[in-house]
Amino acid sequence: MTIDRQMAEAGWLVQSREQMNRSAGLGVAVREFPTASGPVDYALFVGGTLCGVVEAKPEGTTLSGFSDQAARYMGGVPEHLVRREGQVRFEYVASGTEILFRDHADPAPRSRRAFFFHRPDALRRWLADPITIRKRLQAMPPLLTERLRDCQIDAVTNFEASLAADRPRALIQMATGAGKTYTACVFGHRLIEHAKFRRVLSLADRANLVRQTRHEFEDFRPPGTGRSFTELYNVQRLGPANRS
Image (tube, rainbow, N blue to C red; front, side):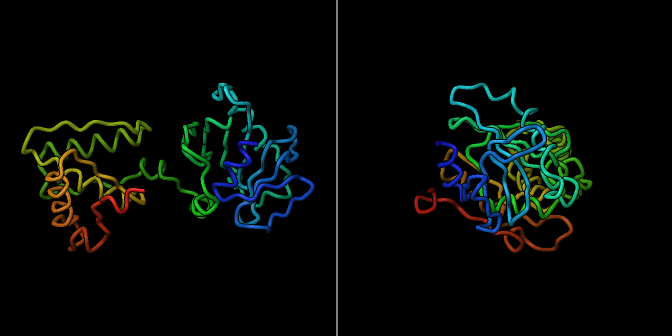
């Protein structure tokens, strides 16, 4: 099956219910796993812990209507496998050409498109922290406004308000010379430090702007740290050797 192959490529060991061995690897996906609502197509175990389900549909199926079905399976998993509230939190609905993912630990959880199934080590990392990125985005600390212009304060404040409201697409429009790159340094630092983003990608359409942006990050000293940004985090200019 296509989904079997996709999960294997993502690092999951796919097993039948009869061959189930939760300790066979970090990530184990068990087909046709029984629940109180009927068998779910795949139950996901990370480190032997049941943490989510995959509901599979034929290619071409509109997936948006099946999230509630997957959620019912999650609520009907065997009780003896659930050790704590919120343990079974990851939900996938997949057709082989499309994947929807929902993390039920998010505030107001919603399904969103995923490029591929997450690797087991990613789910293990998220399981270790019940506070998701979306929760952190709703609890960002006050902005330190030292050395910031009014337009920069407005930009960062409104940008973070957009993310907190689960509107991830935002446009910051500022006049030439208003300090757009410095503003990007400010909110980039806040996303990494407080929202626990692992990476922030900054794109520019000309090589000289890429160099300028990198120098700006190298010179940036996050408020309250007494250190440069590059002393705290790695800044890398991507080139042909690391574009894969």
